[in-house]
Amino acid sequence: MSDPTHELGESPEPERDGRKRRRQQSREAILRALAEAIVEPDFQPSPEWLAARSGYSISTIFRHFGGRDGLAAAVQDLVRQRVDEHLSGGPPEGDVRTRVAELVRRVSAVFETASPFLRAVEPDRQRMIGDRARHILDLRVRCQIDDALAQELSAQPADTTDLLATVLSVGAWGHMRAAQGHSTERAAELMEAAVLRLLGVPVETPRA
View 1 (tube, helix red, strand yellow):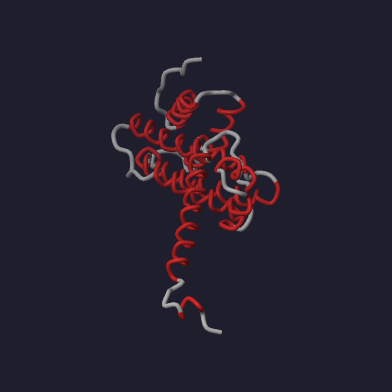
View 2 (cartoon, rainbow, N blue to C red):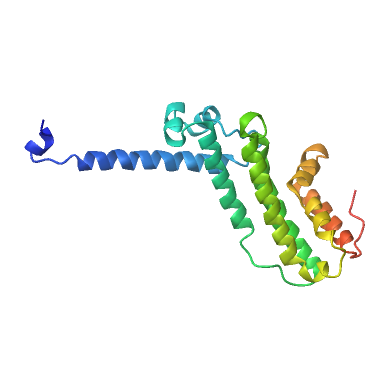
């Protein structure tokens, strides 16, 4: 049977293009809501949470992302983009104190961005997503350490990089922020002092 729109001299293309445009617009709106929400303390990469946050229905979110794991993967992509932005500069320059301060500034911004997502995917079957994200994040931070402190590390014991990677880890950051209740500024100050001490650089005793 012939398409009646062709018999009338009309094309179904504008209608299909309109649906495609609306679908793309709704996906972009949901992703914008995700981008705004991923740093919130109560963030959850679930269709139910996002539906309440974005104003779109759960069925619409499922249609775009295919369920919880697909949504978590989309969130992970957004987090990765934010991480890339924080780490986009070249190796820090200046004396060792200046380079350590810039290194800590970068990684602390990364940890503040990634921590809510990592907490949210800890339970149940999404734990694997979080474990993979943590592994990638650890590798990225280790590269930052090597780039920023290559000169100092060449004169240190071989395990110094491992020690620095432990100090400059999202786990250490989370402990200072949640368990110890430090502000981002105080946590960064403590990280900076710990790195300098590991490198044998004298530092003033941080304020209490």
